[in-house]
Amino acid sequence: MQAPFTLEGRDVRLEPLSESHVPALVEAAAEDRSNYQWTDVPEGTERMSAYVRDALAETAAGAHVAFATVRKGAGPGGADRVVGSTRFCDIACWQWPPGAVHQRHGVPDVVEIGYTWLAGSAQRTPVNTEAKLLMMTHAFEVWEVHRVALRTDVRNKRSWAAIERVGGKLDGIMRADRPGADDTVRTSARFSVVADEWPAVKTRLAARLAAP
Image (cartoon, rainbow, N blue to C red; front, top):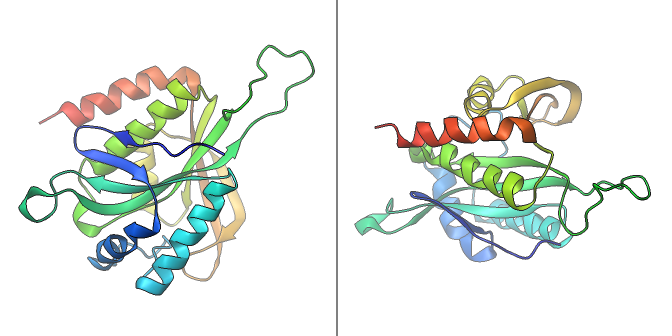
C-alpha cells in the first residue's frame, strides 16, 4: 500500500481522495453532464459516496492511488475548488527472475492513469495537462516505472485526442475490455508512455503549459 501523498503544480493540486470530498465532487459532476456519455461519472450524493468508498477500498488494497483534482483559485473569492478526480490504477510490481538486477520492492514497475473526469468548466483548460504532468513525473521520476498506461472507450474521440496530446502512443485495441458507461460491453483503445519517451513528453507538456 502506498502512503497518501499530494502532487502540486502551479494551477492544480492532486490531493488524496477522501469522503470529505463527496459534496464538492457531486457539485463538480453536476455542472455539465453532456460530455460524460462514454465516462462513468457518478451523479448525486449516493452514487458519488459509493464511488469514493470503492476508490478508498482499492487504495487500501494497494491497487489504486486515488486523488481529488483541485483547481487553484477557481472557486468563489479565488478559493481552491475540487473539479474532478483521477487515479493511478492497475499498479503492478513485477516478479523478476531470481537474481535479476531490476528486482525492486515497495514501488511499482508499471502503472495506469485512469478514472479521470473533470467538471465541465475544467474541460478544455490546462487542468488535465498539468494533472497528467504531475502524475507522470511522479511515476517516472519517483517510482521509476517502465510504463504509464492510459485507456479509453474507442468511441470517446475527445478522450482519445486528449491522451495523444499528453504523449500517449496507441498500443492496440482491446475488444470486449470492460463494462461501458452506457451499459454496453466496451472496446478500449490502450495507450502508453514508456520510460525512454518520458523526457521528450515532459518537455512538450511543460511547453504547452508555459504557452500563453
